[in-house]
Image (cartoon, rainbow, N blue to C red; front, side, top):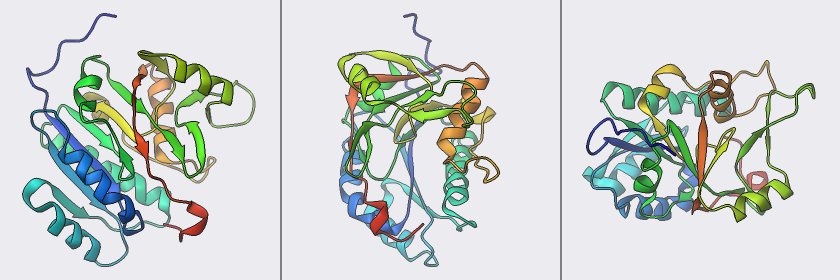
Length: 242
């Protein structure tokens, strides 16, 4: 595969995530992994949307000190709107401060230390690593396109058979989408496509619609199957709604 020449000799990377206080159980693992990333230099941004007048954001600032920035964002009418709003804060930070890429590492994801270099090497507009979807669910979080005419918005989680085949593959594969848990997204893609959700559709999270927008505009998305991240997701049935 022909690789794209980098925008800079050393691309400027923003490692960023959204978070709220119910995810703090995973934050020490996340922060340790982020500090141990072996890429030479990168910025760190945490966007907190806890409904507590900024108390949790202040706690995070004390933890990370001068090694990153924490923003407290207002909550919107529901969790999906809140999440897309926070993702767009990150998106705007990339654009306004001239970053080349957003390295999205969600607050309950722990990637290998060399993840940024390994994803950068492919020179693709969007490329991610693998992780399992969540609490007691061993299926990989990779989106593929539904068959036309089945009444869905256009994405689904992979089947058990597809999951098995992807795990056997070692290298870069083209997919419909790879979630936002571990994804390197190039600046020009963020400039063109904001994050959004709309309850008039089937109320999926913003990453689903983001990848649909890319697919509709014929922008390829890849996943590096040699990169596997730990996912410390909670049992959403046992925590209060965001």
